[in-house]
Length: 130
Image (cartoon, rainbow, N blue to C red):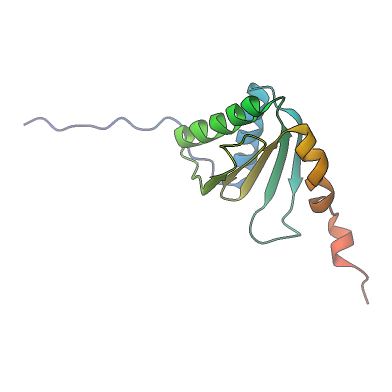
């Protein structure tokens, strides 16, 4: 009986939020996402480290961006905690553990203004020192 040798994976799983966010930014760039913004939110929450906000030109483009993130994350061994909003294509949230990616239509992004909500400098959060 011959032993079966499984091929080794050539791609290493990114372990840090920095590596996962770089991965996500590459995928979004490959598919021509617009107005991509990376926010470091470690000083605001313990739930995640990085939030990425990007726009798609249409609901079909938003869904395609989210689908590519999901598919390539699986290929790279990056755990996917969840996906919300894929059916409508207006706003899709892709949760890649320490990195959350929001892909939105421009009008939805302008309405909710996530950048203003989450882009608070660390100095503002700390406040005055006594």
